[in-house]
Image 1 (cartoon, rainbow, N blue to C red):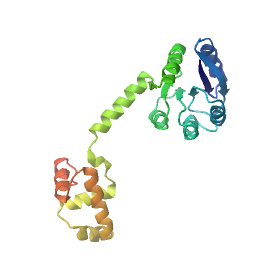
Image 2 (tube, rainbow, N blue to C red):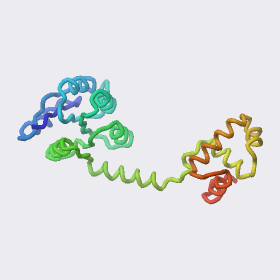
Image 3 (spheres, rainbow, N blue to C red):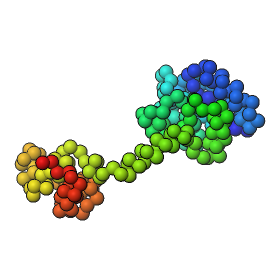
Image 4 (cartoon, rainbow, N blue to C red):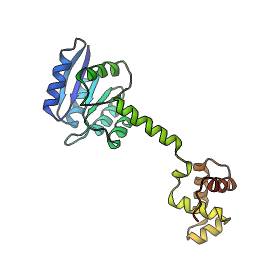
Length: 211
Protein backbone atom coordinates (compact mmCIF):
# COMPACT_ATOMS: atom_id res chain seq x y z
CA UNK A 1 0.00 0.00 0.00
CA UNK A 2 1.40 3.40 -1.04
CA UNK A 3 0.91 5.92 1.75
CA UNK A 4 0.22 9.47 0.51
CA UNK A 5 0.18 12.88 2.19
CA UNK A 6 -1.74 15.74 0.52
CA UNK A 7 -0.49 19.31 0.95
CA UNK A 8 -2.78 21.91 -0.63
CA UNK A 9 -4.45 25.05 0.71
CA UNK A 10 -7.64 24.43 -1.28
CA UNK A 11 -9.95 22.18 0.69
CA UNK A 12 -11.99 21.15 -2.35
CA UNK A 13 -8.83 20.03 -4.14
CA UNK A 14 -7.82 17.93 -1.13
CA UNK A 15 -11.29 16.44 -0.92
CA UNK A 16 -11.38 15.58 -4.62
CA UNK A 17 -7.89 14.10 -4.85
CA UNK A 18 -8.28 12.23 -1.57
CA UNK A 19 -11.62 10.77 -2.64
CA UNK A 20 -10.17 9.42 -5.88
CA UNK A 21 -6.94 8.09 -4.41
CA UNK A 22 -8.71 6.46 -1.50
CA UNK A 23 -10.67 4.13 -3.78
CA UNK A 24 -7.45 2.85 -5.36
CA UNK A 25 -6.56 -0.59 -4.08
CA UNK A 26 -2.87 0.22 -3.72
CA UNK A 27 -3.01 3.81 -2.41
CA UNK A 28 -3.92 5.14 1.05
CA UNK A 29 -4.18 8.83 2.00
CA UNK A 30 -2.78 9.03 5.52
CA UNK A 31 -2.87 12.80 6.04
CA UNK A 32 -3.80 16.22 4.69
CA UNK A 33 -2.22 19.63 5.24
CA UNK A 34 -3.62 23.04 4.36
CA UNK A 35 -0.31 24.91 4.14
CA UNK A 36 3.41 24.37 3.68
CA UNK A 37 4.37 24.53 7.36
CA UNK A 38 1.77 21.96 8.34
CA UNK A 39 2.87 19.89 5.36
CA UNK A 40 6.46 19.85 6.61
CA UNK A 41 5.37 18.84 10.11
CA UNK A 42 3.11 16.04 8.89
CA UNK A 43 5.65 14.79 6.36
CA UNK A 44 8.35 14.44 8.98
CA UNK A 45 6.04 12.83 11.53
CA UNK A 46 4.02 10.52 9.26
CA UNK A 47 6.83 9.68 6.79
CA UNK A 48 4.49 8.94 3.84
CA UNK A 49 5.72 7.15 0.74
CA UNK A 50 4.64 10.04 -1.49
CA UNK A 51 3.87 13.69 -0.74
CA UNK A 52 1.58 15.54 -3.18
CA UNK A 53 2.66 19.17 -2.82
CA UNK A 54 0.92 22.30 -4.05
CA UNK A 55 3.21 25.25 -4.84
CA UNK A 56 1.31 28.46 -4.17
CA UNK A 57 0.00 28.51 -0.61
CA UNK A 58 -0.37 31.16 2.07
CA UNK A 59 2.52 31.25 4.49
CA UNK A 60 5.17 28.75 3.45
CA UNK A 61 5.04 27.92 -0.26
CA UNK A 62 5.52 24.49 -1.75
CA UNK A 63 9.10 25.07 -2.92
CA UNK A 64 10.28 26.11 0.55
CA UNK A 65 8.35 23.24 2.11
CA UNK A 66 9.95 20.80 -0.34
CA UNK A 67 13.43 22.08 0.52
CA UNK A 68 12.77 21.88 4.25
CA UNK A 69 11.40 18.33 4.08
CA UNK A 70 14.32 17.09 1.98
CA UNK A 71 16.86 18.74 4.26
CA UNK A 72 15.51 16.74 7.19
CA UNK A 73 14.50 13.65 5.21
CA UNK A 74 16.48 13.30 1.95
CA UNK A 75 14.68 10.08 1.00
CA UNK A 76 11.29 11.79 0.80
CA UNK A 77 9.50 11.59 -2.55
CA UNK A 78 7.64 14.81 -3.28
CA UNK A 79 5.40 15.13 -6.31
CA UNK A 80 4.40 18.69 -7.20
CA UNK A 81 0.74 19.08 -8.21
CA UNK A 82 -0.01 22.67 -9.18
CA UNK A 83 -1.86 24.96 -11.57
CA UNK A 84 1.29 26.80 -12.60
CA UNK A 85 3.64 26.06 -15.48
CA UNK A 86 5.79 29.20 -15.54
CA UNK A 87 9.60 29.05 -15.32
CA UNK A 88 9.64 30.64 -11.87
CA UNK A 89 7.75 27.64 -10.51
CA UNK A 90 8.92 24.67 -12.59
CA UNK A 91 12.69 25.02 -12.39
CA UNK A 92 12.98 25.96 -8.68
CA UNK A 93 10.65 23.08 -7.75
CA UNK A 94 12.70 20.52 -9.66
CA UNK A 95 15.97 22.03 -8.45
CA UNK A 96 14.67 21.76 -4.88
CA UNK A 97 14.51 17.99 -5.39
CA UNK A 98 10.90 17.27 -6.32
CA UNK A 99 10.37 13.78 -7.75
CA UNK A 100 7.95 15.08 -10.35
CA UNK A 101 5.74 17.89 -11.57
CA UNK A 102 2.06 17.45 -12.44
CA UNK A 103 -0.71 19.92 -13.25
CA UNK A 104 -4.06 20.07 -11.48
CA UNK A 105 -5.67 19.92 -14.91
CA UNK A 106 -4.39 16.34 -15.24
CA UNK A 107 -6.85 13.49 -15.07
CA UNK A 108 -7.23 11.97 -11.61
CA UNK A 109 -6.06 8.66 -13.06
CA UNK A 110 -2.87 10.35 -14.32
CA UNK A 111 -2.11 11.66 -10.85
CA UNK A 112 -2.68 8.19 -9.40
CA UNK A 113 -0.32 6.74 -12.00
CA UNK A 114 2.20 9.46 -11.17
CA UNK A 115 2.04 8.44 -7.51
CA UNK A 116 2.79 4.84 -8.48
CA UNK A 117 5.65 5.85 -10.75
CA UNK A 118 7.22 8.15 -8.14
CA UNK A 119 6.89 5.37 -5.58
CA UNK A 120 8.99 3.17 -7.87
CA UNK A 121 11.66 5.86 -8.05
CA UNK A 122 10.81 7.25 -11.47
CA UNK A 123 10.87 10.94 -12.33
CA UNK A 124 7.36 12.04 -13.28
CA UNK A 125 6.91 15.09 -15.49
CA UNK A 126 3.83 16.51 -17.18
CA UNK A 127 4.38 16.49 -20.98
CA UNK A 128 4.36 20.30 -21.03
CA UNK A 129 7.10 20.32 -18.37
CA UNK A 130 9.19 17.85 -20.37
CA UNK A 131 8.87 20.11 -23.42
CA UNK A 132 9.88 23.13 -21.35
CA UNK A 133 12.94 21.32 -19.97
CA UNK A 134 13.99 20.23 -23.45
CA UNK A 135 13.73 23.78 -24.78
CA UNK A 136 15.80 25.04 -21.84
CA UNK A 137 18.43 22.35 -22.44
CA UNK A 138 18.60 23.16 -26.16
CA UNK A 139 18.96 26.86 -25.40
CA UNK A 140 21.72 26.30 -22.86
CA UNK A 141 23.66 23.98 -25.12
CA UNK A 142 23.56 26.53 -27.94
CA UNK A 143 24.26 29.49 -25.69
CA UNK A 144 27.60 31.18 -26.57
CA UNK A 145 30.32 31.03 -23.94
CA UNK A 146 30.69 34.81 -23.79
CA UNK A 147 27.12 35.12 -22.50
CA UNK A 148 28.57 34.23 -19.10
CA UNK A 149 30.92 37.20 -19.06
CA UNK A 150 30.03 40.08 -16.76
CA UNK A 151 29.83 43.64 -18.08
CA UNK A 152 33.26 44.40 -16.62
CA UNK A 153 34.77 41.26 -18.16
CA UNK A 154 33.30 42.21 -21.55
CA UNK A 155 34.81 45.67 -21.15
CA UNK A 156 38.24 44.21 -20.37
CA UNK A 157 38.01 41.71 -23.24
CA UNK A 158 37.27 44.59 -25.58
CA UNK A 159 40.39 46.40 -24.35
CA UNK A 160 42.39 43.21 -24.77
CA UNK A 161 41.40 43.12 -28.44
CA UNK A 162 42.90 46.60 -28.77
CA UNK A 163 46.23 45.10 -27.71
CA UNK A 164 46.31 46.78 -24.32
CA UNK A 165 48.36 45.18 -21.54
CA UNK A 166 47.03 44.60 -18.03
CA UNK A 167 48.66 47.78 -16.68
CA UNK A 168 47.13 49.89 -19.42
CA UNK A 169 43.71 48.34 -18.77
CA UNK A 170 44.06 49.00 -15.05
CA UNK A 171 44.95 52.65 -15.65
CA UNK A 172 42.11 53.18 -18.13
CA UNK A 173 39.45 51.61 -15.91
CA UNK A 174 40.86 53.01 -12.64
CA UNK A 175 41.17 49.59 -11.03
CA UNK A 176 44.15 47.73 -9.58
CA UNK A 177 46.46 45.55 -11.61
CA UNK A 178 45.52 42.60 -9.40
CA UNK A 179 41.83 43.14 -10.20
CA UNK A 180 42.59 43.17 -13.92
CA UNK A 181 44.55 39.94 -13.65
CA UNK A 182 41.64 38.31 -11.81
CA UNK A 183 39.18 39.42 -14.51
CA UNK A 184 41.48 38.18 -17.29
CA UNK A 185 41.78 34.81 -15.56
CA UNK A 186 37.97 34.59 -15.31
CA UNK A 187 37.62 35.54 -18.98
CA UNK A 188 40.00 32.78 -20.09
CA UNK A 189 38.16 30.26 -17.93
CA UNK A 190 34.69 31.21 -19.16
CA UNK A 191 35.74 31.28 -22.82
CA UNK A 192 37.54 27.95 -22.34
CA UNK A 193 40.76 29.26 -23.85
CA UNK A 194 44.39 28.95 -22.73
CA UNK A 195 45.75 32.48 -23.14
CA UNK A 196 44.99 36.10 -24.06
CA UNK A 197 45.67 35.52 -27.75
CA UNK A 198 43.06 32.79 -27.94
CA UNK A 199 40.61 35.00 -26.04
CA UNK A 200 41.10 37.80 -28.57
CA UNK A 201 40.67 35.36 -31.48
CA UNK A 202 37.44 34.09 -29.86
CA UNK A 203 36.21 37.68 -29.51
CA UNK A 204 36.75 38.46 -33.20
CA UNK A 205 35.31 35.14 -34.41
CA UNK A 206 32.15 35.53 -32.35
CA UNK A 207 31.51 39.19 -32.96
CA UNK A 208 32.05 40.17 -29.33
CA UNK A 209 34.03 43.31 -30.20
CA UNK A 210 32.30 46.63 -29.63
CA UNK A 211 32.96 48.99 -32.50
